[in-house]
Image (cartoon, rainbow, N blue to C red; front, top):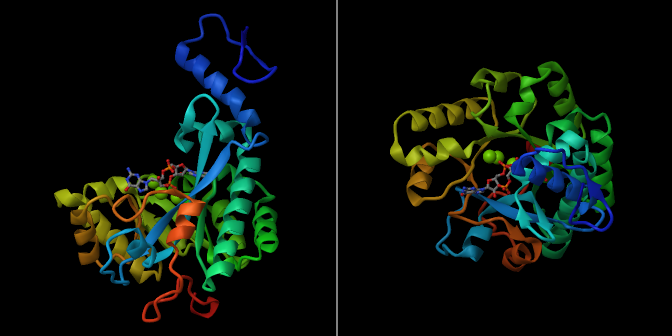
Length: 303
Ligand code: C2E
Ligand code: MG
Ligand code: MG
Ligand code: MG
């Protein structure tokens, strides 16, 4: 037995457990307290609209091109510092804690977007990642509706992102669930598109609004060749189905150039903005939206 980092909990460290396994067990143990102890935080990363031109390449110029913001969960661990969601979300999914954590992210992000909207006087869009475990849970519709009602955010300002990997399960059930969520007025995006085993042909049958092209394809764009062809065909198909396309992980001007050439409408990446704490986003939000550009959130009638 070893005393864990926390107050009075004990973690069983099996004899001969590897250091990595011990580390994971202690992280799993700490995760159980993180929500109650207020260790989670939400960062926000802008998605820019290529149709909006900007002379100002700095943060304010990019904020003026924002279509909206993606909420990205952060865990400020008392001893380890920032732990990546890639390291703890799978643990939270396995334990079921992702349900409570995910509901907290939804509440936090919808309240934040509603506050920015009230402050600035134009609708600020927000995207929240939904785990496959949340999507499969029968309470998800209630959780989403409650977050909208309590925050006062319009449903059309909220996009739920589900990774392409959720589609490997029961496609019928997933489609039905996504349709229910859209019937509540929220938008749905397929995240990390192109990585899973689902093919372009799935898109046709899915009730979604947006496709987010995975970073791995975007990072290969500068090299030209097959990645460029794949991205071009995703954009083309999405357009023919009336879907929005967001390119993820744009880091270089060269990638941006190729994307604009392919008529990609939206992009997200370090080139434009990193995920930032809410107060930093607030400081950069434009005072008002430029009038000659599309609104931050489409009116329901045009969806
Ligand atoms: P994602 O939803 O695909 O989010 C995009 C990830 O790419 C984020 O990583 C973001 O910080 C990172 N990113 C953005 N632009 C760039 C870029 O230009 N270059 C590079 N190298 N990376 C970039 P992050 O925040 O570490 O999140 C990782 C994943 O964890 C997310 O991928 C998402 O799947 C999951 N995640 C994050 N927050 C939540 C949450 O609240 N709930 C659930 N269920 N999953 C979450
Ligand atoms: Mg996402
Ligand atoms: Mg993604
Ligand atoms: Mg991704």
